[in-house]
View 1 (cartoon, rainbow, N blue to C red):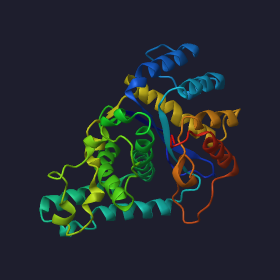
View 2 (cartoon, helix red, strand yellow):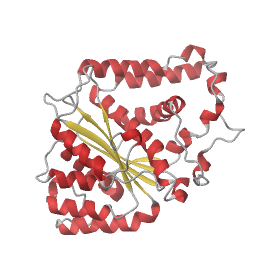
View 3 (cartoon, one colour):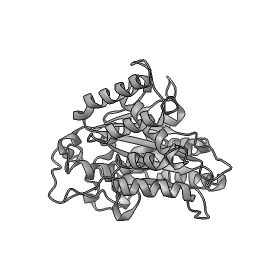
View 4 (cartoon, one colour):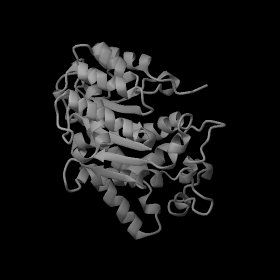
Length: 339
């Protein structure tokens, strides 16, 4: 399974409501690779762009972009998105959330047996706390995006392409040729945060589905970690640690230059399209929302296919224009279950 990840927007606080930023992942079985390449090449030809160039949404007409989305909807891949409205986020709420998460990293530090482990946790906590506010917001969105893929993406594809779940190739757009502080923080906190989420709310598993390929990421009885008990003195039901999430997300994760990854270029076009639609900036925003929604998958319990995150104490809802786009996407999304 190939998972291509990119973001759209700066995630910096904005003065007006409706200033959405988004992170998107296009989850695509390896069997679609050739067709993906053809669709992207066709898009570049239609826009008069060189085949080896990177094309952006701003370089396309709506007709060209809509045709691209229509072709993608014929493939097996699925789009997952987490978005946040920078116009609703409050700087004080972001700072409070950031400090809380940094503190959670070291909450059991003193219970650790080894000093090196304590120092490692403290270093990670300091790294999270020192991120610029906009990078912390992006980090939180991206962690939740990965969680949505593991929770909803696995459930979706185990019913349709179960053999594709034996390998997860994560390809994330890099911003510099050298690894940034953000990228180092993200790769460090991701497994820990995802494992913590899974303990509170384990991944759903579909009874009777073929998880044989995905079982590669199961802990064996000999390997199953006992660190929560041994290092922290915390007892949990070991059945809740069935999946080695660290292996799943670290086994094949790379930050890549989007110029060298057609999949990341597609993720960029999708993230930009979702952001533009949430902002109501397409001339035909209804068609844009419908076409983007057809790439998404219905969420559970009636939730929209786009996860919205906010850093505010007021609980203010999104504006009407954005809500309409989200509702259209939800109505157009693919069914989660095949039966």
